[in-house]
Length: 138
Image (cartoon, rainbow, N blue to C red; front, side):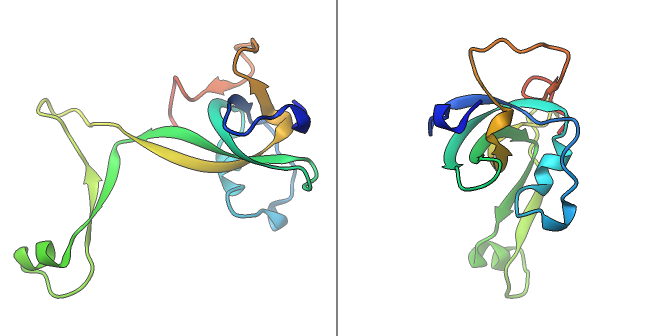
């Protein structure tokens, strides 16, 4: 896709290449995540476009699901539990009555090359990338 065709706020299919350029020494915040997503396909909403970068990049949000959640305790809750003054949080999983973990939605910000974007309606070959929206292991 070309930068001039990208629309802010629209949903696109992102296909991260199987091999990324070897620029590990210059990786910016958020780009390490792309190494984990190599060879994957997912949907993301574009929130910003940077045409000054070479190649042009977008910032996007990907909806993910997690079973782990974090709850920050108030000072009153910590006192009721008999904890000394301080800041505390609970980190763990939420289960339903049947013992199954509940998946909670989350937004994952990322930066990707414009070249990796495809319109949602465009048919893509199914065997080239792993679709992690429907088969999440990441």
